Length: 133
Image (cartoon, rainbow, N blue to C red):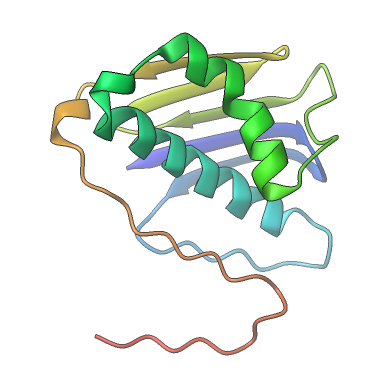
C-alpha cells in the first residue's frame, strides 16, 4: 500500500493519504482534488518508469526531472515555487521525497516484484462513470 503526503503545493495546505485500490476525491471547486490526482498519477508513472527499466536507472536524472516533468505534463507551473512545498510518496517499490526544492528517489524493498498499478483520472467535467467486469 502506498502513502502520499503533500504540503503547500497549489491549493493544498496539507494532506496525508493512504492510497487504496479505489480512491475518490470529492470537494468544492478549486480545493485541490485534481492536484492530488495529478501528483498520484505522476508518482505512479515515475515508479513504473524507474522499476520497469533498470537499464535506464539513473536516479540523479529522475530526481532532476521529477518536478519539471510534472509541471510540463500536468500544466502545474507555479505550484512548486514555494520553498516550503513538500511532497512524499512511498510504496513498496519506491520512495520519492521532495523538500526544499530538492528531490530524492530511492528504490523500495520489493522493486524486483513490481506489479503495475492501473490508473484512471476522470476530470471534474465528466459526470458519468461506467464500470464493467
